Image 1 (cartoon, one colour):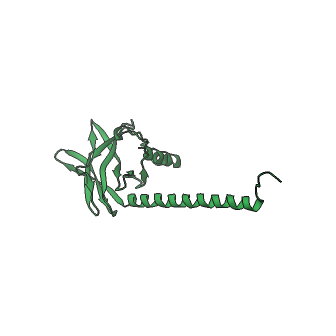
Image 2 (cartoon, helix red, strand yellow):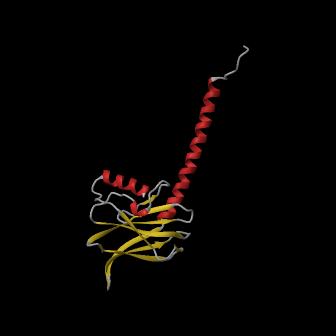
Image 3 (cartoon, rainbow, N blue to C red):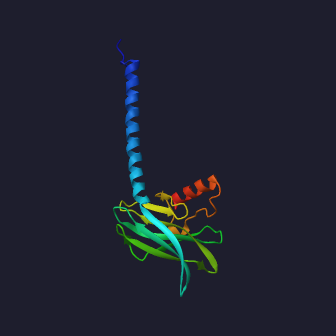
Length: 176
């Protein structure tokens, strides 16, 4: 036989299995890396309280960084209760929150005669990834690279009554 040797079936089978195991190994490494990044973002603890001062009533969002590294560019995300879906961003007075420190952001309770809804918190971790933390469910979503600016983010602001609405809001927060 003067042509090319294609090998035997066991050689082909072992080549396919080797390639598959390499792909599986890379997938597991990537998945573990994403899990570590998410675990660091989950260490940012938030809670809300209602308050009032001489200027009016507000919703105070407390942010405590329990992660090992600082977080940067913390913004409170809120919307008017008019159903337009327009997200507004309220930046923190400090540019970064060190480890084991706490800051508070005051979102006005009423704006232009309409009640506002405190929705979440956006921040950047020490690795440069942007995250959004939903206040009502405490879920953390990584923002995609191809996103609009914070004031024009469109999210679904209805109740979490159904499973479909929950997943739609989760998808929208990732794009925020």
